[in-house]
Image 1 (cartoon, helix red, strand yellow):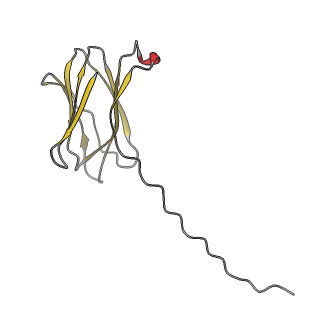
Image 2 (cartoon, rainbow, N blue to C red):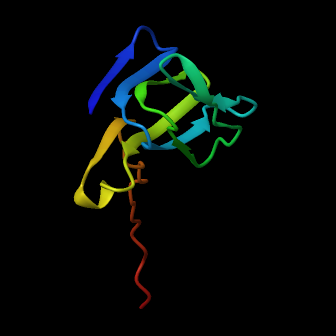
Image 3 (cartoon, helix red, strand yellow):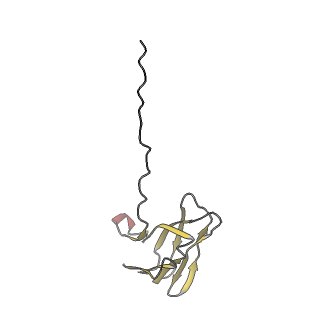
Length: 126
């Protein structure tokens, strides 16, 4: 599978790949801000085949899209309203043999900042 991600500006984002018929896409997306709707447009050879969307902002929501026909698949979204965590493609009959392709993944978030522990001297009893 040939995968190509392209970004012209911070929005819109498009991920393209040549994928065969029967490919399953697993997608995790969420809205970037309360009130936004996260939308991902899925097309094969220019024909729209799906439009997963969510208003969820906390956790990423999972979507699965199966390609009824193969061709040049394009996943497009507005990066100002939509966060796409992971997108990967696989064929159900070959996935157990390790045949899957990661189309994209967001950078890992930084670890949380922990408050600095402070100790104070207590007078001893006695």
